[in-house]
Length: 388
Image 1 (cartoon, rainbow, N blue to C red):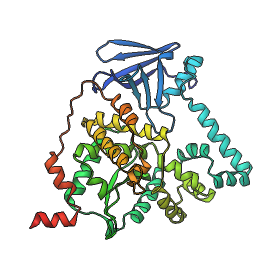
Image 2 (image 1 turned 90 degrees about the horizontal axis):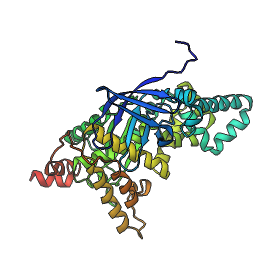
Image 3 (image 1 turned 90 degrees about the vertical axis):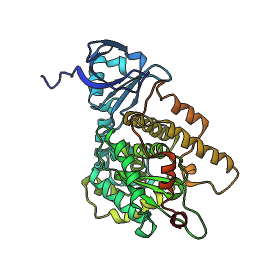
Image 4 (image 1 turned 180 degrees about the vertical axis):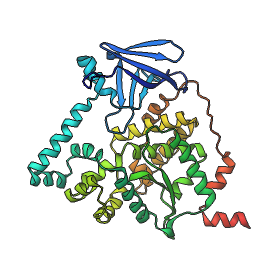
């Protein structure tokens, strides 16, 4: 095939908006729309003006195309190169889709501008210009990101502040592994750490953090707030999306010096310790904007459905913390998870719209009574009471 001839056929997954069942399909790109062909031979035609792209703007993301309102039809394509073909074949009909060629041009222009004007490049990073963080983050090797995440985890959760109960760790890591298996094109090995930061003066934080490179930190205070394993799965799916979409990494890059960024791009870890200390402090106070949180919500909900986990758990937990937020509305003592992960009834409504009208969970987790025992195993006082 001529290297300049755009590819017209692609493989993808189709969701009909009625059930969570994935259908493998062939997608044909035509000048005025997409032709979707199922394995059974049935076909659908989507006109470009009816399609919106909701994911696939960053390298490593799968492309998600939707049609309709509310519980909509969805196409998921793992290869982002389909966007190049769409722009070559459909031209003016797909101007509302992301164009990777423009992103590559921006990256190249950024690099050449930096080489031509080092002082300006340094100044840009000193001020943390937001539009630079996206393209640069996509160029950072995953291996460097993983080393940063491991370093940050050792600082946030030193050995003396970890819950090491095997039953707790195994139960939570099992949920993470179940979700991870349903995350396509995932470069990360997700690792979970339970942090017990309880002191004599204050209880454990109600918090969860998504560190770069696949590191997830769940604080004992949040673990004890969950009523079921499905609620914890909802929290973990949300945090895994922050990592998979490199949300925290992009914000951290904005704060990095030019030396750190150059080192990161080359995979050099020699300056990682200095930056890691700064990044650790920043991670604890990160507050994502609404667009980023909604992206993690959507991705987390899709991940739950794809894994066969009851999505009601995510809704229940967000509803719980929303109630806590209303109770503490005039208090300065707002749990960390609420201050960095805002919840609202509007957010719950948006999430509900992504749940198919017919959905049957296929994954069974421990019962609510069993989960109560698991979540309290990191509390030494309750563990002692159960043993007497």
